[in-house]
Length: 125
Image (cartoon, rainbow, N blue to C red; front, side, top):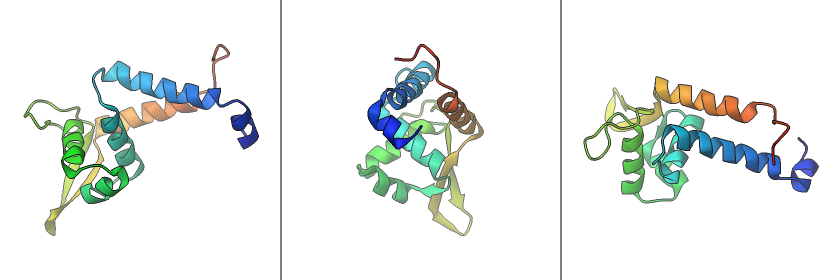
């Protein structure tokens, strides 16, 4: 799709965005948009630190921590998290933690990519 085509008719791109959001809502009905943003950044930048994530998100440190925990194995309330992200401690500096997708998170990212790269259905808006 060329830039001229997108400018002329942005509906295909908007439809892909809609499909993506609906897929995530189907899998995680109560997931906040900010948590989706954190997931996507970690998927795009495996190994990102929480500090780097904070700068990219432009939000509060507690907000980033809350979203990372929600995406991890255990959320901030001690209940099961989504299991999509893992935190890896630097073996030489325990203060440094990198974030990456868990196997389950990689599967989800692959599903999202596959659903967004499929050919457009003929009945799209």
